[in-house]
Image (tube, rainbow over all chains, first blue to last red):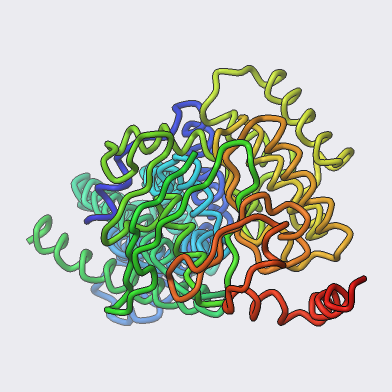
Length: 235
Length: 254
């Protein structure tokens, strides 16, 4: 919390901040598109396959495959599972980059120059991760598309049945719920790794240790926040 | 001028600075020397405001650092340049961007003007054609010169150097020392240098402050340091074989 207060004090020059934010959006969001889309495509396919392989009762309609794929991807897989992956990819990057700056006195250099290092380094990351829901929206689409490909081209269900399943009892609030979760996870992804990088002590070895610790605590934060938000928003 | 009065700083109950008092003159290269663990770096970090002293005061041209509002401290820091021991260049920026950084943050100069000033100081530290290189692509000596260029690019009133020639070969170390002294005289800067290197001390130490166990043990010039009978200073100075030989030669009348 003390770190967060520091982040918003003594702001950096606007034009510099704008460039930093754009760079962070590129590094953290656009740079993660490839891997998250790849994972979600195959995870969507696996969810569809698993559902189809467990459907042996003839009374249950095949359209359930589309329904189950949509629900799993939107409610949990895209926001939560991808956030855990992002804790590894983006979280470690944030901790190690800030930690390396601490070790090599670059943060001290900023401070000596009269710049608020927390605002300069952490604020752009928080703002960049406000765009995290856009990434998750793409992940949702690709995940469902992966399920569609596996089901239809794997001859598990017809295209019409899959689409009927996709549209069945669709509740728009579930998408809103997923995006609210995503926003909170984005904040966790920006702050916990930054904290571990900024306040680390020691040398290069400790940067590695700080990255691991940050990954663990970011995952813990995401899992606990997921439970609390699900209780608050869905029950 | 920087005046330090009765400065004390402890870490985990261990007192590192024990009532340190010193003065650093304007337009001179003021050197802080002393053995490892004597409190030099802690002293410097207190002066820079990176550490908060337990007691005592640091006065920058009549203004006490501990009485300044945070905004005034930020303003003062814009008037400081710092050359870190390991250069502390921003490794995501090119040489040119590193040097222009303080101007970009605090001046209203256009990019072209910033670039002109950066080239001027890079030229001053004898670095040409390296503008687009990343810090990892240049040598340690070149990194130190870039860091020096960054420290003086906005013409600060105070320049701090933490072991500016550690890890450098003697020739490059002399170049860096001379640059610091020349810039100090040219711009009338209050320069404070931490050093272990007796060659540097002899070369550019216009005022020398010797620390021992967190206290001021001796103060003088590079001319006086060989004549002092202060045991702590002579032990430090003549721990070097070269200076031992110099003393023997002096005693033998050479």
